[in-house]
Length: 293
Image (cartoon, rainbow, N blue to C red):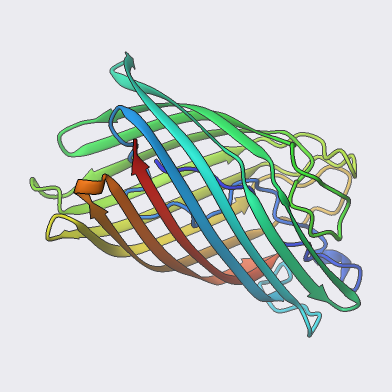
């Protein structure tokens, strides 16, 4: 189970948009940063992982999934997110105990109507504890963590990187290897977020559910190729505002390469958001580097 980034995209519900699409993505977790075998944690040891994520969008949708303007809407985010992972050799209920943490650095730019703003800054810190199992044809993972409002935030519309609220997050995932050689894999990773009150608006964003999946084939023992996707849904409404909820779904290709001698793993994926409601609809590009120490 690779791991989270902050919800780094979009001050999209701007004053020039209809009230019905003022709801923002409520999740800290950015879908699409985990891909093939995303529910599988590594064996015991120390690891450093570096996420590089680009998100672009040129439309904002209403609650029916139709473009709602403004006509000049453009959003761009680049995030570099280093993460440190430690999987111990200690076990609980047969699963290896692990801990990890990350802190994003991001650049965000949004143009819409008369709004034109860009910001570069440090985002919200995330830390979690994990359990992971490695069976003959299965990998399983569980995690509990929290997003901390360490980044600079402001009431919308804004491009500041911090979200301004605490978010406990629970994670569960599984990877199934369909053949004895483990060359075919099907992975599913679920996350659920419980948001607290936002310090700049005093509104409590709704709870959020995220599912990421991947189907992969291993070639020549070092290449993984396949299809990945995500679905993210706001489960409950924000407090004190309209009842609209945001959702998004995407699909796309991924390739991963292992360099055994260097103990280095590199993956690249592209995901096209084919549907979105009450939020922006765009494209996600992710390059991930993982090094075992």
